[in-house]
Length: 158
Image 1 (cartoon, rainbow, N blue to C red):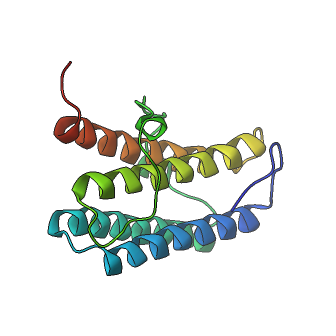
Image 2: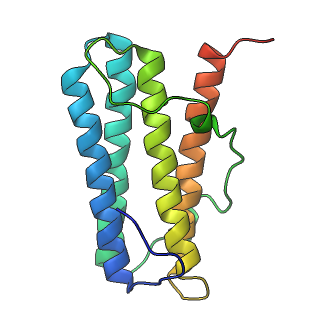
């Protein structure tokens, strides 16, 4: 799903777009779970899929309530290593290992972060902009944790 630069949608339309994006991510993880055989890779993918379910529920709650509780969300974007620039993006095959699964999830998260950033910037000044900025901040935290995990397990010193 793409958003046009500088375009602000109605709150409901923007939330529906976000729900569609989260559902697409969930389906991508589900397909990968059905394909991959490595137990550690499956754990990474299952955690990512469950996180998407949580995001979807929060978006649906925002639809019902007309907004979100700012205390439930991170107030700033987290610094990132941008590992997605270094990692090859590809569909996962049955023999994918945990490194490949983690790289796959990092790419998906980076796309989600970009989506929420565009929504927030497109609605700059509108009452709903902080809602999407908070979702972007949350995605940046998740992405930072994934990058830290990748660094700890797969990037060597020197």
